[in-house]
Amino acid sequence: MAAKKTIPELKHLDHVLVSEVAIKKRIKALAEKINRAYRGQDLTVIAIVNGALIFAADLLRQLRTPLRLDCLRATSYHSGTQAGGKPVIVDNLKLDITGQKVLLVDDILDTGNTLFAVRELLLAKGAASVRTCVLLDKKARRSVPFEAEYVGFVIPDEFVVGYGLDFNERYRNLPCIGVLKPKYYAPKT
Ligand code: 5GP
Ligand code: MG
Image 1 (tube, rainbow, N blue to C red):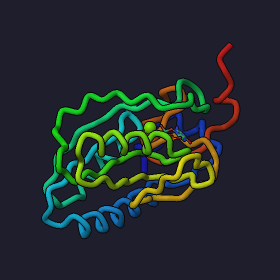
Image 2: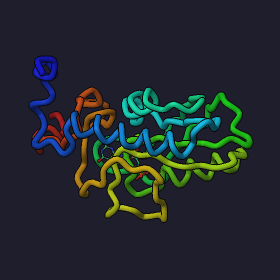
Image 3: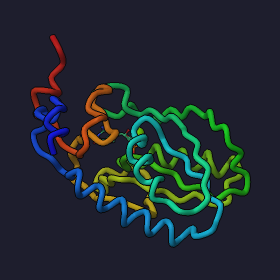
Image 4: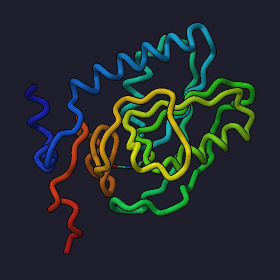
């Protein structure tokens, strides 16, 4: 596709882990599963931004159940590729989720700290149920017990960018998931 060639940062990738076509196909299958599970039921989707923005946008357009959307901001990577410990969750939800079925959407499940903490928060706010949908799952890195009900791809322990995922706020706009060439991780001097 000609449009792809116009994103210069695509050349920064060492390799592509999940292609644009594979993402599209997998999202369709995930949406079918979610549609079956929640058919005709009222659902509240909570996306964890910024990372989940692109995934949520593509997934939600394939959901056929009546739903409301809200967003939470959670930060654990302060900069670079190292997690900053306990996640900071900015609770600015506008929707009342008391008694609601909630589907949490995030880009990647890594140590599990973020989604574990967010799920606790939503249950404390009175959600009737909380299920989770992530595009990527780095199973090998889990440090708290947490599994998502809907998973796009299980990936190896590599730091990935693209399709919403960033390195120092860059690369979110790439249409695929990939690993950066080492020289692009190097701090600017
Ligand atoms: P957890 O709390 O599960 O360790 O981390 C979740 C968050 O860390 C994700 O929502 C994402 O923002 C960030 N993260 C974890 N692994 C990666 C990765 O490989 N690449 C990027 N860009 N972010 C990651
Ligand atoms: Mg995130």
